Image 1: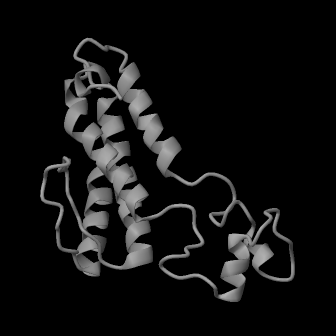
Image 2 (image 1 turned 180 degrees about the vertical axis):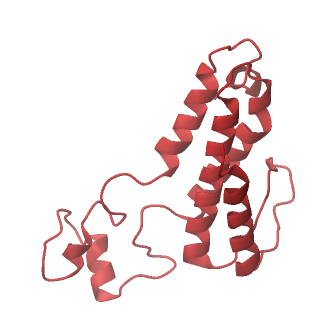
Length: 166
C-alpha cells in the first residue's frame, strides 16, 4: 500500500522500510510450523497419530488419496509463489537507491527467496514460467510460455551460485 519511493527511499539511511518489505516476503510467503498440511504432523496420515483439525482435515485427504490439482493438501498455491517472486523482484530492482550497507545482503536474500519459490513451484508443477527480474503490471501480456524443467533447475542453480558469497 506504499509507493516505491517510500519503500526504497534515498533518505532512509537505516533502510527501515526496505527491511520491512523484505521481512514481509518471509512472513507471507514461507511456511511456518512443523508441517505444510494444515499444521498437522505427517504421522496423522497414518495410524500413528490423529489430526488436530476437525471437519475432514487435509492430512486425511493425503492418507486416502483424495487430493488433486483442485483439492491440494499444502497451504501454498501457484499464485502465492508468484506473488513472492514478484515482491522479490520489486526489492531486487529498487533496493540500490537506499543509502545503507546491507542492501547487497538484502538483494541476495531476495534472490534466494525467489530461487526458493521457483524450487517449490518446480517441485509441484514441473517446468514453470521464469520471469527473471521483470515486474509485470496489470496491463502487461501475461500469456507467457512455461520453461522446461531443465531450464528452471538451471536458473535456480545459477541464482544460488551467483549469491553464494553474499
